[in-house]
Length: 70
Image (cartoon, rainbow, N blue to C red; front, top):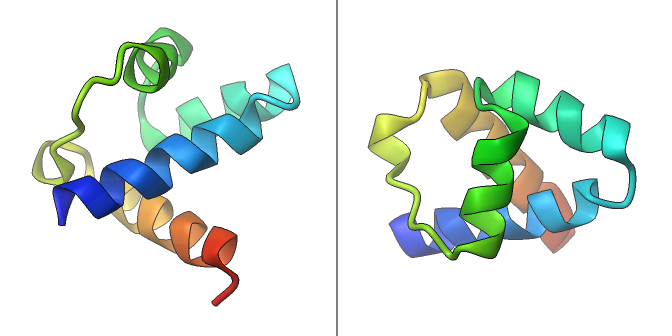
């Protein structure tokens, strides 16, 4: 589960990088700093969904589903 969450999260950050403002909004919505998003994305850090706030887990999963076209 963590890998699929990570993949969706990474894709979401990748899409958000198209606009700097969007990336900042994503970071705020997930309760993370912009630097943490970059570290997760570029340093290939593993995200443990259980350590993220619940709203971040739900947001990451929902955005992942939307990106997959569900």
